[in-house]
Amino acid sequence: MTCRQLTDDLLDFVAEELAAERRGLVQLHLDGCPACVALVYSYRVVAEVARRLPPPEPPPALLTRLAELARPSPSPEWGQRGAES
Ligand SMILES: [Zn+2]
Image 1 (cartoon, rainbow, N blue to C red):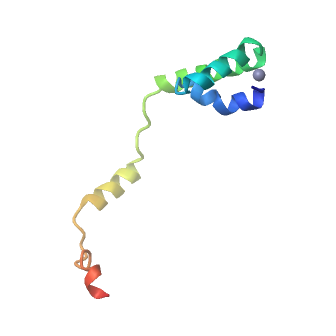
Image 2 (tube, protein in one colour):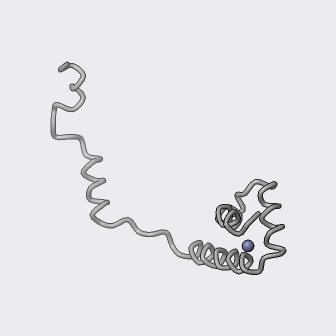
């Protein structure tokens, strides 16, 4: 496995979603490549920080739009489209 191939699997590796076979290959590469070990470390730090952040609040404009969509449609044409053709 090369460094290039490893970066393709790195996100899944850090997220622990990589298949056991690929995981073994990644681990094997990491045993002999300090540069990629540093990369895994930085990915882990980013993943850890992201986990600690609260989920983003939806913007008020989006909530307004969703409330509008949830309201019954003012147009009586909705639901009758199939009858026209
Ligand atoms: Zn490497």
